[in-house]
Image (cartoon, rainbow, N blue to C red; front, side, top):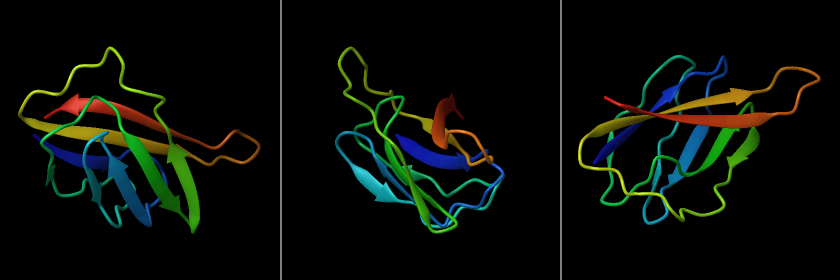
Length: 100
């Protein structure tokens, strides 16, 4: 399957690293509102471990495990990723899967 990143936040990603529980890829810089190129994965689930760097600050999305999850079927997918960095709020990374 192929997975690209859609940056749905209001912030540019300085870098993005994805680990799907079996494979990993670095996606590099992704501007706010933009898509990355697709990367091919043999094994992936509907969510993944993410390290997103915004304005030099690293943000982590950490799955606990993949128990009960099924592997994605072949095809093209987008991990829609948003980083919330609003003042006086808890900073967090959100991930949604979309089938392209």
